[in-house]
Image (cartoon, rainbow, N blue to C red):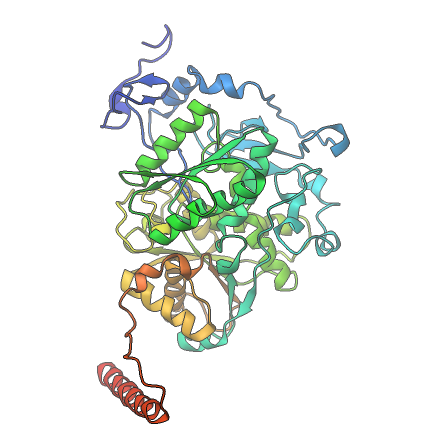
Length: 512
């Protein structure tokens, strides 16, 4: 029972499913718990529309979560300490995205006042003399050239290079889909594990070290698992990775090869998320998408910084971005806002377009309905890395898209596979299913006139196709082997040309 003067804690405020007797939820065995939704690779949060959130926030205050966090001093002001004065530069701090409460620097992701997400906020005046075009150009050839606006100490020595991926013009894809000024931001080649998650993990683990964690982990649909395992190995951190049991085999292998302890969990992603939140609390480990999430999310800003720099310090007209939890699109927008505030780019409007799979499209539906309210969905799509049915940053993503004058679309699994093939055949970029979603949505936006052909548009490819080869199983015919003779090869070419011509005629007949 809660202490006198506090509201009674009722199960009906929460989930209609009790924890099993062997687990501890909210610090009490057998207490019912709310399974809260995920970010881009899952995080625990609440919706402000629920009346019981403040009660739940009070309940968290009464348990041992805060006994661990109280070690860290909270500050409501920025303190510009130099590296010689201490290990942490506090020109940034955590603040609640809704009520604005400040939390200083600590491993925490949820506001204890209103149960809303926390976010890193920078003192841009302090950054003004340090985050300049000249300083950036003299920095390393990776994401750490932007470290002055990343949540790390001035004295931090990066050991996990990632980022500065190619921004390439895509003329052949453009001609297929009716565009004339299309670029691809290709994070399918981001080091070290070939997805944009390498960026966010680099920042998260820098903070894990700063907070003294010797063990790190995450819940993941694959890309985040790969990135955490690889970079933790490089930093000498112990690692526990929790994934749904039905994850793609390639992503499981790409996690285990780095020596991480992989835990396959029966159930869906939400079950994995809940377990990770309990583990982070019980063991005092650094989970990149739970207690380290505000720092982790800041790594996505480097995608926006790079796009602006690679375009000659200007902003595009349009950004097309895949959405899982919705964090990436909001952080690119934040990056552009910071660049404008610091005078590095002209203040020009950028429209943001979100891409989802039809089998899991809660943010797309919200945008189409003109609302920030996210209606959770049960994921059913081959694009597993985007399959977040109740996205943490969904309301913020919907708000950002609509405020910019953009739009959101979703595409079927058949369209996803076709787009993977088309991107590979036209531009030589092999993307995973999330990139298929983005490519297919980009094509639809042009077809529907939401993006005009001459507008400078950047579409974001966030992961490598080698991670999801199972989606192409059976898509290509394996021809019989020929003998090592010229006549056999000539016969093969004739058969191939005849088959190709027949396929073209069939397509033309279908179109007519």
